Length: 126
Image (cartoon, rainbow, N blue to C red):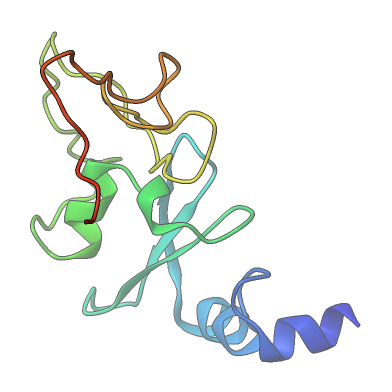
């Protein structure tokens, strides 16, 4: 069953084709804090990531995202980006989870939905 999942699906980890391609042509470049492993081919014209666990693109930090998309040539393992004191650590997209951002006035915010003011009259059809 596991072989069939690896053969036909990409959301359960790398497919057989990706694993074979990585084994044959991939040069390991580095690993991020989440455990994702980054590769490139011999001439550096192709770059890819093998996710640890479920593939979620928002888990890739800005440093590695820039390298994957050829924004800069050196990977963060060789030339780390300068960090500012005010920068927060990278977090993946939390939409759909209990940790999602809910602004004031949102129906899902802990304080409840927007309050109705006394000068408001609800519209009713005639």
